[in-house]
Length: 357
Image (cartoon, rainbow, N blue to C red; front, side, top):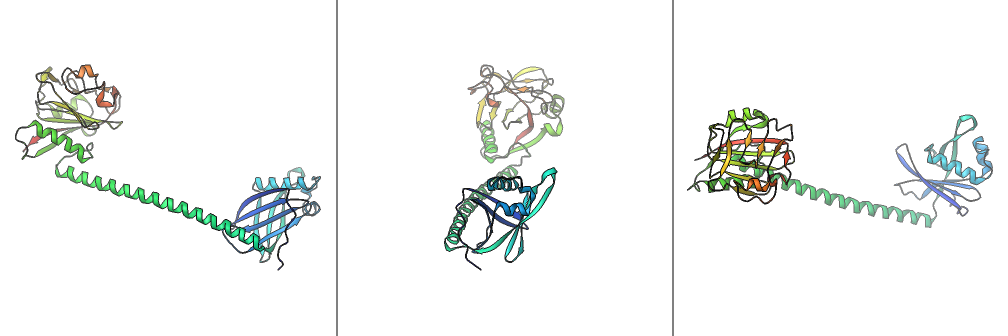
């Protein structure tokens, strides 16, 4: 097998990649006074390639589709279009040659399948070294990418492990405190509520708090009738609202609902925001909530007001700072509980009766 002699200097050159029979080939097409076509398998260093040189006369003999060409440049353009339109294939003919199969358009709309024979040749030393350098550089780049991907995966796994460890710890604490909830999913949220309830009772440091779920909107119905059937005449009520945008807030009322239709005073009533980790205590002697069976949830002056069918509409709302300030301490912005937006759609409401043992 003879060493390859350098082809004429190309005035025009194109490269393509062909996938055939599970192998990937790089095709190089060079134009000078003739057309040189070379190919070799990618991802495989053999020190060999396949090549042939075609004159315009040779191409015309192979296919009358080249008869329209006035010179070799036009023949190059036809071959270029064949590759652009992906109308080429390649296959091994025997151990010493491959066939480049191209589909050439003929007059009248017909297509001719033409076999271009490329002969096996040895790469010269310089070409082989260049090929090896290209392969090494590619492998180094792939290795860098792989290392980066592995580091990204490790970071994600660490985050998942940390997240699930916190989830397990949160669930364990919530279970230990005996609360049936779909809203509270963080130990700090439950601890925040717990600490405020402890401060509400005298000498409670050594006592336990029990959360008894008496109402859940998705279970019992999202309307005033369902709510009051479950909650009325019970004292020490804690409600938690979760909106469809993830805002979590609620209130605690010590006095029981009595269906008097009056605005009631409850000095131990408070509002809270789990997102802001903030407590809004009631003002001494001020009205805290509206004790009526006609409203769903209605704290005095409506810092929290829940409308019927709250799971499907956007009619529930919070109030301005000036209105909230009438009965509660600590509001700094309008609609503060709901991220400064007035209206919201409820995702869930849970109401608990709190007992101190």
